[in-house]
Length: 306
Image (tube, rainbow, N blue to C red; front, side, top):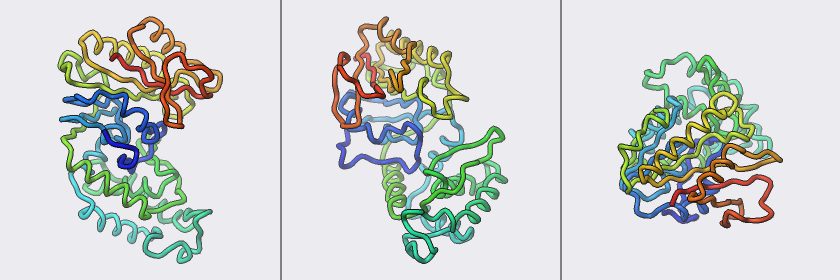
C-alpha cells in the first residue's frame, strides 16, 4: 500500500472522493489481494493506490469510464501538446507560462473573468460532439480543468453544464495528470461500465477484494437526488451479503450519521450482521473501534467482513 507521501491523486474532482481518507483506508485493506474490484470507482483515487495483481474499476457513469479509458491509452508527453492546442485555440489562460498579471487577474479572484468566453465556446463545441468523435474525451478533460472546482456534471440532455472555474491547467494540475497517467500505464488495470450487480460474486475468488464507495444516502450531494435512494442502498447491502456468503472479502465506505441524520438502513444492517466490523474514520487520520464515543458531526465509516 502507498504511504501518505506518495499517494496518487486523481486529476478528476468527485464529491466524496477518498484521497484525503486514504491514509486511514489503506491500512484497513487486505495486503494479499489478487484482484481488487472497485464497484464505484469515480476518479480512481482508491484503485490507483492499492496493491493488487489486477485492478478492475467499475462505474455506472459511461462518460467517466470513457474518459479514464482514454487516459489509459495515452501518455503525458502525447497528451500535453494536444491540451495546449485546445487552450490556445479557445483563448484560455495558461498561468503556468504567463502568470496571472498577463490576464489582468490574481490568484485570489482567479481566472474566471478572463476564461469565461473561451470556456463557454469550448463547452458549446464539446456539447456538439458525439462521444465517438476523436476529440470528445480530450475536450472533456480540458473542460473539467477549466470548470468550477474541476468537477464533472451533465444535464438530463447529456450536455456538460458546469460554469467556468477560477483555475487553469497550472503546474499542480499538470503534475496530477502526469502521475495519474504514469500509474495507469504501469498497473494491470481495467475499466468496465456496469451496474454493480452485474459483477457476479460467484465469479470471484477468496483471493479477491471488493471495495464499494457508493453515493451516500443521507448526504445532500446533488447526484444522490437522481441516482441513489433507499432501494439502491438495500440492493447494494444485499449484494455485499452475497459476497460474504461466497467468502469474498469486501469493504464499504459510507456515512452512518451526519447533521442529526442517521442512515437507519445501514445501522439496522450492522446490527443484524454482528460479524461485520465498523471502523470509524475522521479527518485527523486516526482510527477507532465501533464503540467510539463523541463521534464527530459526520460519522464516516468503513465496514469490513474480515
